Amino acid sequence: LNKKMKSLKLDLGGLYEYQQNRPPYLMIDAADEVIPGVSARGYKKLSQNDWWFEVHWPGDPNMPGMLQIEALVQLGALTVLTLPGNKGKETLFVSVFSKFKKEVLPGDKFVLETKVTSWKRGLLKGVGVGYTNGTVACEAEMVITLPDILEKYLPSKENLK
Image (cartoon, rainbow, N blue to C red; front, top):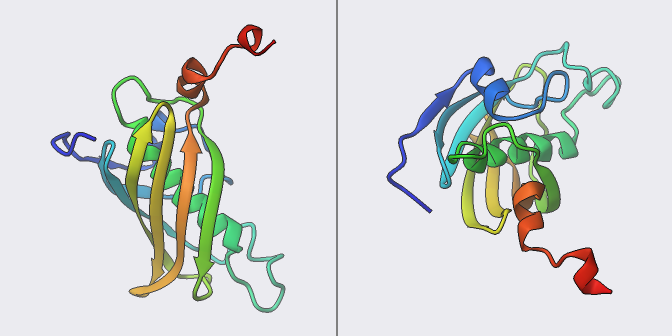
């Protein structure tokens, strides 16, 4: 991993340029710092108007845990989508091990930090932490793939017969 690559700051337009998610499923508002192939830091400002608060849970709204993980995965994917040749490519979430420590509520700024632990053959292994009000809300170990890169390393179907 190249730790000497220039860091990027991505607003909403920059996010649209590098990744395929769009509202209402885009779970990040901005990336304050992306060091391609290394790490990313960003956030989502949560509003009472976010679609999930009305249904999860009525009278006691909070951000569903899997959407917290999705936010970490989306930010983590930016670390490899910003590498040369990967802009706009499809990413797939492969696996996650997560821990939830506190509720993420309307009005919170959900601050996200992700780090790449391995990037090989189209598979990203990484870790992420989500914070609200300076306190850890969730943690995740995740695996994400860029299928068009991974496919180059998989055996062909003809070779499996």
